[in-house]
Picture: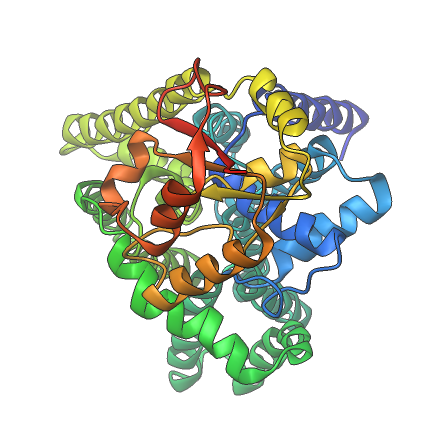
Length: 453
C-alpha cells in the first residue's frame, strides 16, 4: 500500500468513526438499551444473572457492559462509547467482506451508507453485539472459502460461538447455515471435512462459558421462554420481511451467473439470517442482519451496468429498495428526536423516592439504572402475554415483601402491539396500595405512584 493510500485509509476510517459517534451522541432513555444497562447494573450491585434476576437473553451482552464499567467506571457514556466501537468494527467488517467479494472503489460508499441509515439504532444492545460477531464470522468464512486457509475457519467458528452468547437464535441460525453449506461442499469433495470439524469445535469453545450456570436454568430462560412466550407476543406485520426477501431474490437473480462459492455462501447465509428475524421482523432487526446483501451492492451494480436487457427495470428496483430503507431510517430518526425523557423527571424520581428499590413497568428497564435504583422484583420487563402468570404472581410477592416507596407505570404507544392487560396481579397491587402523584404532569402515559402510609 502506498503512503498516499495509507493516509487516505487512515483519514477515511477516522471520518467513519467520528460520523458514527456524532450520529449516536444523544443520551436517550431507551427501553431496549435499558435491558442490557439494567442487567449490568444488577451485576454491579451483586445480583447474579439468571439466579437473582430473570433474563431470556444470553449472558455476553451483560458481561461486556459490566466489564467496561469495571475498567472505566459505571456510566451511560462508557457503555455507549464501547458500543459505538463495536458498531464501528462491524462497519469495518462490512467493507472488508465487500473487498473480499469484489475489490472496488465503490466499496468505500458502504460504511457511510450504513452509518447514515442507522442513526436511531440503539447500540447498547445484544442485537448490535451479535451483529458485530456475525459480520466477523462471515468475513472469516468468506476469506476461508476464497483462500482455503484453516485459520480463517478457526476465526469463523470462534466468532459464531461468540455470536450465540450475545443472541441465541441469530447465532444458532448462522451456525446451522454454515454447517449446511460446508457439509454440501464437503459432500461434493470441494473442501476437506476437516474444515467443518474445525469450524464446529471452535464455535463450541466460547459456549463453554455457559457451564457457569445449571443446565436446567439456562434451558428455562434461554430456550423454553423465548420459544413459547416471546415469539407469540411479538407478532407484527410481515410486510417488511417479504420486502427484504424480495430484494434478496432480485439480488440472487442479478448474480445468477456468478459461479464463485463465496457469492453462493453470502446469498445462502442471507436467507437463513433473514428467516431468523421471523420472531420480530421490524427494520432494526432485519437491517442488522442484511449485511450479506449490502456487501454485494457494488457487484450487483456492476452486473446491472453491464446488462443490455432489463437495465432500467433493475435500476428501478434498486431505487425502490433504497427509498424504502431511507424511509424507515428517517421514520426512526424522527421518532428518536421526539421520544425524549426529560432529565428533570429522573432527578425527581431520585429525590422523591429515597428507597433503594423501585418498580418500573411494563417495559422501561433503563429507568432503574438512570435513577440509581434496583428493581424491587427479579424482572425488568413484565408484559402480559409475554411473561407468564406465575412470573406476575412472583413479582407481586416481591413487591409485597420489599414495599418500594415508588412505582412507575409507563404505557407508550409501542406497547399497544402487545395488547397489554392492566388487570394483572402487579398493576392491581400498585393501584390498591399506592397513590397516584403529580410528578408526571409533563409526560404522557407515565404514572408515578407513591406507597400509602
